Length: 387
Image (cartoon, rainbow, N blue to C red; front, top):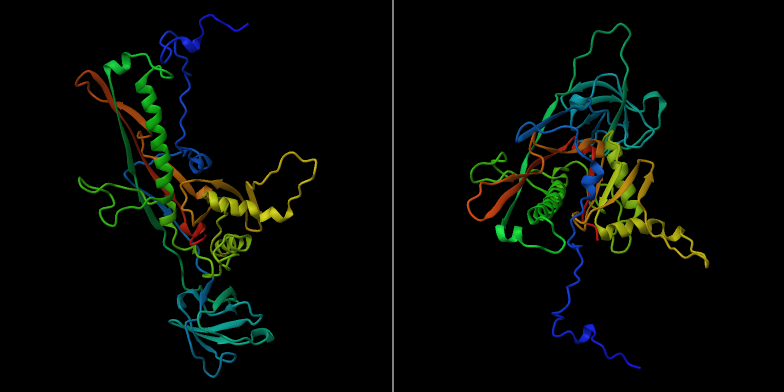
């Protein structure tokens, strides 16, 4: 027998007789995660000024390059060699050209011109060429010789600038008094939402931000902005097919293991930095996952297929792979995370500042001031121009 009593479907248009059933959970779909900031963690220090500085140093270089196109009498027998930086050499240095087995002994240094003994110690001959790398193996002093000329490097001060992040909040008295779904206090809810946006923007600026060309400290008309990681990398800035980075698969600009390893090797050769973090966007993260695709096996009884690579270990470091949607889609960051810190200006971490009441409303602002300390840029690297 069919049901003849009153049911919900005959309660009238839009069910006016029933209490609404609305979940107290408010869903947010807009991306706001900050994986790089989470990986770096909170800084143990604060910046003490809007111009934040730190000091870097380096050892005397033990290599240089040939700066000469013609050789007399020939490239195998020339004993007078012009180099790019003659001050890096001393009499008594043993020098290896390129990857050759030959060793040369420096007998005189005059400006950028070296006088050398070729095939020192009966080592086999080799050909010199312009831009060839010369590695200084070490210096041999004479017994009882005088003190050599003093050589040293100067420490360098590097700097970055703090950037102010703000967001306004204003809620009417009526809105505060009204009962709402999923929100107990509208001001607190707005604080949470705006703070998520500001932390998201902080990570984006840490990766991609750029300081103005002039008046970097800011003025009443110039907004002060920090330099991010990618614009700060000058030494190890690589593109496939250039600078020792081999072509990738496909069109020649794909990210593959050969490209990644070549970049890691070049950074290792240029510095004592230890790359432990790889930061990529979604498409290039899939490329890294595919490194091991040919090695995976899937049995007929397996109910789970895993296609994820979170740690990449090579001869040049164990790297955590961080997926950040704020990375450019054509770039890979290679970082030594021990040399990267995001610092708040002292007392200026993200916070809420209530404003004076000027009407029937509550108003205030969220504010925070941060900068990036990116030490020894040559200890990091970036690969660009990838598909």
